[in-house]
Length: 205
Image (cartoon, rainbow, N blue to C red; front, side):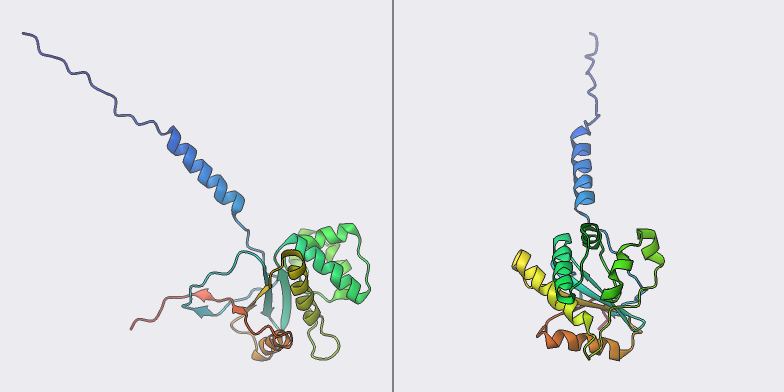
């Protein structure tokens, strides 16, 4: 009697569906990822064991280093509205091309009267341009105070949200500069703000 030959079945698994899902997820993460803006100065932030993440939107950041202060705010619409308000305040005129360039400028640190020159630079030129920082004297020339206040107004007008403020300071920065920035926030009754730090391991108990 002949032996019954059992037909072997293929063990191959159709991976098409899994590949589709993987590429779909990859595409989603690429499209929704937010590139980190390049800092105008090298800032070594202090370390902390706190793991609270930085919000993705509706935030203004004050970068402090080498005695200079730089400003950035989220949202192209907020930036454009902010420049319109500052132009009215300082009675300065900007072209539509300058508004468009400012809308995509993520961080800057120049006096207001030098903004035309700064916006005329190309992206490559901005990387090597030594920005002097935003004037923040406690006397009449306190442009940083106006940038922060007008950005808060712009965020409230466009999105009906309170703008969150964070300070990104170099760990070796002199204390008076940080104190001056905090004083500007307190003058606007902004007593709740974040300090950006790098994560370090918690000490062993």
